[in-house]
Length: 330
Image (tube, one colour):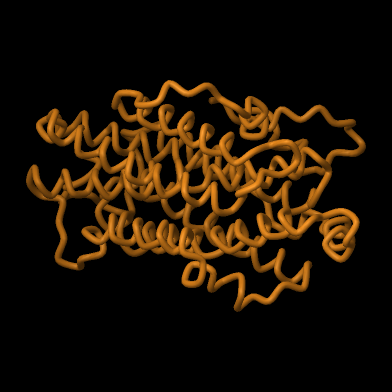
């Protein structure tokens, strides 16, 4: 039994399991379950309506991130349901992919909830992937990257096709979910640290927690294919992937500089660029590729947000937080 190209896979026979890491990711996802409506938006609405709390730069930053994420989550869901699920033949991995697809739907619902709560024009927000050049560039890049798996005649049979599949998985999991999302996460959580747009920031925290699991699953999937098909992982292909990731990094840096050109709250745009470099090295190492930047983490507090190490009074903590805050190990 293999993780791809297994013609004898019975989708109804999930036991016995071979890839216990996939089962663990599924269980962690279930433990992390949340819905947007659990997060109060009352203070956010008051701040959004007040000219005394948010400046124009901050409002622009918030709108740009809502605009990027609102359509990026749908793009990732399409990748899972229409492409990746079809090629990954292992039952427990497919079970996790179904869980991930549900979480992407929750994330899309999050941005609907934010638009409704703040009274934003949904046509403006959900069309930013067409109207904002640096958002459009990122989306176009990923769509072009992952076109192989959307071909209905595509198969992972053979060395070159397996390489194409890994290439698309890197584009989807490592670049899209592992890099393109994280400058935006840092921006929104920087606002939250200043007690601005706390509800939106809390939802971004939960999304980032989910995305960290998605990234972990994707990297485990890539590494397993590498192990089972070692002939695909030659030096030439590794260099191709590094070059691909570095190209994606440039798009994310451009977005970071465009979304926050003058900085906010004592954090400048260059720090977001440095953060992109820092997380890129982590992603490269995770799939066995060499670091490229050796940049220090300018936002050490971001790891606390991923790990949800929240020090709250028990009676001020929501039930969801109490149930799930300590459930993950990284």
